[in-house]
Amino acid sequence: MKFRFLSAGESHGKKLTAIIEGIPANFFIDTEKINSELFRRQQGYGRGARMKIESDKIEITSGVRFGKTLGSPLCLEIRNKDFEKWQISMSINPVDKIDFTDCKMVTKLRPGHADLCGVLKYHQTDVRNILERSSARETAIRVAVGAVAKQILEKFNIAINSKVISIGAVQAKNFDENTNNDLNCPDVNAYEKMKKEIDIATQKGVTLGGQIRIEIKNVPVGLGSHVHWDKKLDGLLAQSLMSIQAVKSVEIGLGKECAFLSGDEVHDEIFYENGKYLRKTNNAGGIEGGMSNGETIVATIAMKPIPTMRTPLKSVDLINKSEQLAHFERSDTCAVPACGVIAEAVCAITVLQQFLEKFGGDSYEEISANFANYKKMIAER
Image (cartoon, rainbow, N blue to C red; front, side, top):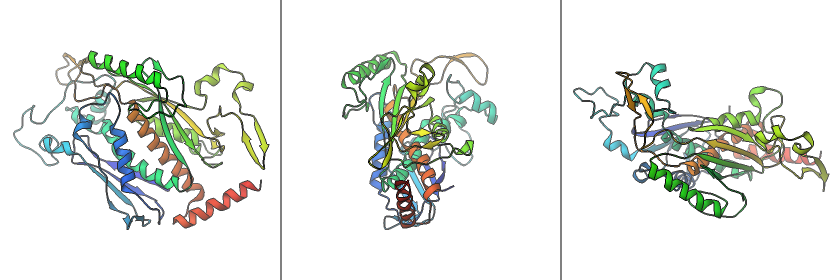
């Protein structure tokens, strides 16, 4: 597969790292654009103290020379500033004579987190051995990888954006206002109500989830496949989006609303005008038969409230099995806008993988020629 990556790193470890394999040569990579995406991920009304500690910056340590990719693997690194306070607790080498407090052990399980499943699966006695990697801090490096993918897609006029359309019980009614606010909400009236919901939740010590709408524009016809189940584009996007911590559902186009409508209300009629095929509606969300159909790809995801809360739920101590309140570590009241940035990143990775599979070559020039030839062929149909 072109453009595959492996990431490593813990929430309070020294750094987060990703190695990307399969990037063709001669693509210009702008590190400031990557840093801009990392900054976006850290913003949003309702974020917690960790965002004030870290100021994520990317370092590219291989695969780029004079700003252009070489065709060899890219290595990306983000240093965790907070590691300075966690050097004993997160030491790679054995540490003698440290007590429970020094090593920041965790034994109180959190409902809704990976804690219990992880300690049982990996036979652990310290929940920190699970929570450090299951933490959403891991998504910082995925956003960096996605930012690289976005820059490559931009060369072919493919753009990805996200909008927060609900937080808690507050729903946006207008999805198209050109707004610029710290919740990335396209509805001014809903934005103010969302902020109040977050303030109330903060006072209560609880958390809020919400919904995010992602749009992928100018995707050419034919990414994905109808032939094999594991190459269907909607399936691949759904898997990528569901892999984001706290995401519990993915809808393409009308999504679940299709179940309540008749076929004539759901399917997008096809027209042929000015020498090309088109649709005047987009209920399918840009994907039919597992393939992109040339319309904007639209996905909506639901993010659950973050499990770590200042007002914790009842739980159990892993060691003595006594009833306890769940562990609390720094947390956000609401991270829905950040989840939107992460969603853009994972969609960019998936779309680029399928783009390179169809138009792949060893260099930007070869891929551009393949893409231009395909567009010409499509236009002649």
